[in-house]
Length: 369
Image (cartoon, rainbow, N blue to C red; front, side, top):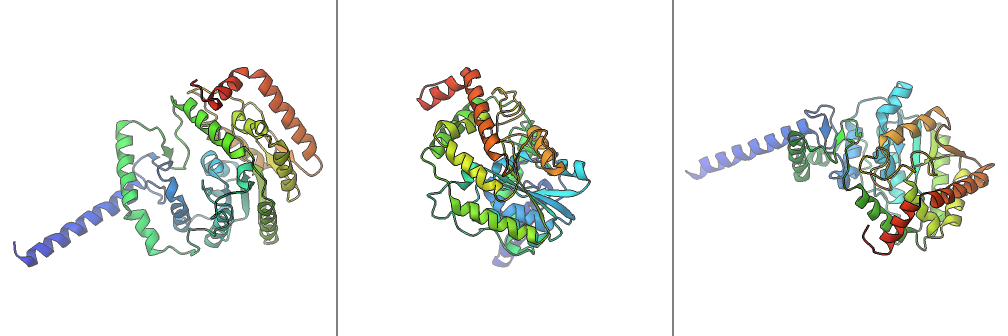
């Protein structure tokens, strides 16, 4: 084979491989960026989680819908809230742009980026977590967003969506999991989690307990973050955008650690600070969902920190329709009363669910359950 023919073959082969990769990633669509898909389920999270800073803004840029509302927050809102439920309630389009693992300032920047891309947005629902407002030892906590601020699609973003090796790997893995019938850790096209019997759910709860026990021990509230949220809230409402604040739930065995580690005063002061900004829908208290028994078949939570859509739909019902069927609505006038009620409820749970309390203590003492 002469040099000319070799180069021609190399060029043709490379072009064929790149074309195959582009078509594969476009059709399989593992990050749910494009509208079409060849599978009902898609490998969105947790495999794609580290790329969501990029893939969610790309999805917004490609999305031609007239978006009425956005949901935002940490991974709790990301995994627990179904944008399609908003459409069922209102007949209007919504998008869930919550991203797990963002720094505090990145969270505000992400909303700004969404508003640049879709200035028609009229409603913003911000899910709040106590842990986000604690002082952080991470020097990057005040960093600006690492995602693009350009409202137009960039060439590099197209490359991530269609040519990136990780995207290709997730496309292949999506096909394998669909064909094998093993749909654990997979999501529907809307982002809705595929519910399955999680045989390892107890281990996942135990891992969360250890993490939150460490995170809440000697924790301090960061007043600067409260002030930033206050200023940001005023800025959005001055633009005529309706902003709703709400506290995402975790399983009672997780927020029990807030009290167990001596954070009750900080936690209650945090809520007092929030209601000085606006009324807050509070879903983090002992109720029929958060006290659900921990079993592989449970449909309310898939670890101690993240609820499923069964709970998320109840949250959306309340915050969108302005009801309190599940939420406790915190205001300046009642926050002290509800804080005390939440504390009394957590003590009741502690005294009645001895099995879970003993289990938690064994894990913290390094004993095998």
